[in-house]
Every structure is written in C-alpha cells, then in structure tokens.
Image 1 (cartoon, one colour):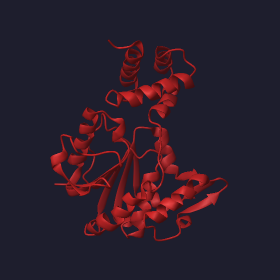
Image 2 (spheres, one colour):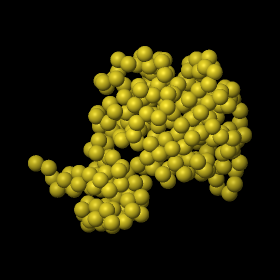
Image 3 (cartoon, helix red, strand yellow):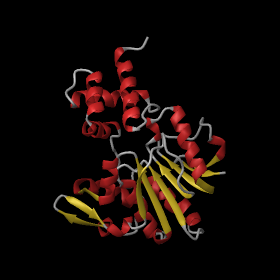
Image 4 (cartoon, helix red, strand yellow):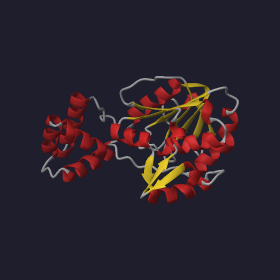
Length: 271
C-alpha cells in the first residue's frame, strides 16, 4: 500500500505535467522524493498537497520549485581525466571532419559548455563547430548564456583545467570583476542555447558528438532508454556519446548500438 507521502508526490508530479508540461514522471523516485520534501520545507508548507495548491495557482512558485527539482550542480572540466581522454583520443578523429555539431544535453548553468569550447579552441576546432546546449531549466540556461561564474569556484576550475591537459593559462579565458569571472564571449559565439527535455522532446539535428553527463542518474530505466534512443537517432555514423562517471549504456535497450571507446571514461561510439 502506498503511503500518503508517495501518493501526494505522484499527484504533484502529475499536476506539474498537466499544468506546465514539465515531465518528471519517469525521474528516479528516490531523487524526486528527496527534492520534493526539501521543497516542502523551503516553502514552509505543512504538506506536499499544500505545496501542490500553491504550484497550481502561482506560476512563480512553480518556477522556484523547478530550481529545486533540477538542482544545477556542475563545475568546469569536471572529472579532468574525461576531458584529457577527449583531447587525446577523440579530438584526433574529430579533426578529420570538415565541420562539427556537438550536443551538450542537460547543460545546466553552462560549465561543461565553456569547458568544451575551451578545449575545442585549443585544438583548432571551435571555429568549425556548432554547439547545441540544452536544458529544461530556463534560469539555468540564462546563466549559461551570461558566462559569469564565482571567482571562488574558478580556482577549482583552474586546477581541473590543468589536469585536463590545458595548454594555456586558464585566466586567459576570463576577466575578473569583483567576485566574478566573466568568460570571453567569443567562446559562445557558435553556441545555441535552447530549452529541450529528454523526457518529452524529439531530436532536432544530426550530431557528431553528444555529451550528457550526470543527468541520466536522475532518470528511471524507462526514461534512460528514451534518452539513449534520442542520442542514437541524433548521432551520425560512428558519432561519440559521453556519459557521466556513474552512468552506463550497459543493460539499456541501446547497448548493442554503441561500442565503448574508453569504457572507464564513459566514452562510446555509435556502431
């Protein structure tokens, strides 16, 4: 028998889908439950049902809740070994293409977008690359477009960049102002930021490389399969798929459509 809490969460998630067309129904139950209960405390509600009433009647409250349901957690050159592997093993193959299209799915506030742009610039590929950076959270996308990050965080990013095989001084890519680092706008000249949901939207372009890291861990198996299906459909022949360190294609419906290039770094190629 379902507990009241679980019933209320289902009703809230269904209400969000019906009212705002944001689909969290196939997100990991444990993750959603943790975030909803946190939201109940943040909004000072006595019950999840009380939170649902506020969300249904006030779009501003929903937008605040969306920030809690899609908690953006990222950093530049996260898992530096991954980016070093891209530089050493993937870039030489990418250099054989006359032009490139890259999709960064679930780009959050843009840290991975700028990491990829910096890597591509250093390898002479950025000028012939179009990057699609997508997310379901409009506030995260807006922050990504601005390219402004806390200077305190940039210290850690610099360390990551160096371990990822960075070829210059990381400070060359931003201007420090007060407590923030403003990244060079030329890094995003070839970037298209767009709202896109892996739960409800379809493929929009053929791509050479897709990076979707630390997103699928929040999906249940059905939604993971849907996402893998989109990636398989979007990637060109022998295109690359990058996943997070705790994510894998193994046991998915699409595992046989990909081969591991570097399994430890979660880099795959479409067969």
